[in-house]
Length: 396
Ligand SMILES: Cc1cc2nc3c(=O)[nH]c(=O)nc-3n(C[C@H](O)[C@H](O)[C@H](O)COP(=O)(O)OP(=O)(O)OC[C@H]3O[C@@H](n4cnc5c(N)ncnc54)[C@H](O)[C@@H]3O)c2cc1C
Image (cartoon, rainbow, N blue to C red):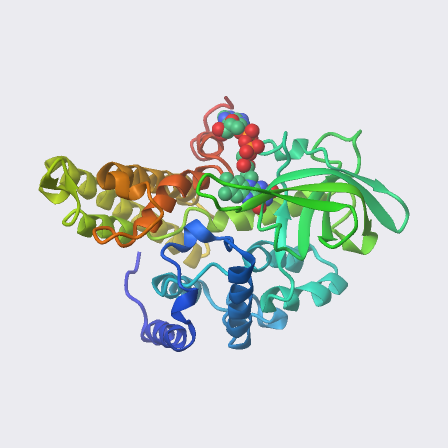
């Protein structure tokens, strides 16, 4: 592993930092971007869409995308540096995140020329916001069992069924979704991958409200929805290959995030908050727990660096890749649990206070941390993958 940045990389960091300083207005910033990946209301969504356009015009959206599709062709280290600076500035997750990170790269690999021309640039600019229609009420971990049906009707498909947990569907212009086009084929074979305009008659979006009051995701119902054949990605009944491409992009970015900053912030709060009449910091268990969590953050950082080193050397993903999603999301839960133990009532109110000015952040962390152990493949599924594919254990 090489921990040194080259002078060019340092210069790139300064460029990104300065640009964000000059362009990111404070009212766009968020305490913890990961807990507000979807805008809490339409007004915030529209402000973030404008922000995406500003970034796009300066060439900062889709930095890793090839130049021919409007990206920067940024190498891996530049992407890492960009992400570090973006998080450091407390900038919000872009509303077009699903398009930029998942749908766009999938279309580059599987889309027709017409689809690339029609969609890619609009994904970057934020003109089209996308959501992901994979999960269904009976199909999450076992995604290939999905039941939403698309019947071939000549120039178009007729879609009927339901998706669930669809993040950001309430704002989305388009959905990339999986449908069953051959109910008689073995389950992985009869699936197709469709691009569907959310304004098509027959689509109903019903928000699901989380316990922190945030409508992050939705149920999406399809009733006789007509989708032109031109919106099929890859071949009919061979959508599983396309599905896997999107999932690979999704897992590659899961489990990220710098938890160290959270633990450092809790260490600072420990000097302000009292537990049973004494400062939290004066209690041995609090200091031990903070030390423990910090060690875990460092271990995760080096695991991430090992994974990065493999990629830079052109090696295939190793065990580190599988560990990152699992260990990162589980560490997030342990930090949130500790925050609720140490902050007590302060973590239960969604209002700033003198002693804990960032109480809303901890309130949201406590209520939201577990979602990352579910989204993009649950912890149990990650354990299965590591057991079977990394350690070579027999299937359970
Ligand atoms: C915040 C968030 C955002 C999401 N956004 C989207 C989105 O935008 N679009 C979308 O399509 N989906 C989205 N999802 C859905 C997500 O992909 C699913 O929740 C996930 O795949 C798990 O599926 P499930 O909820 O149906 O649980 P199930 O698959 O029913 O699992 C239930 C439990 O059984 C366990 N289990 C299942 N199979 C096994 C097994 N073989 N071995 C051991 N244990 C097993 C699971 O680990 C889990 O604990 C989102 C989820 C969350 C939490």
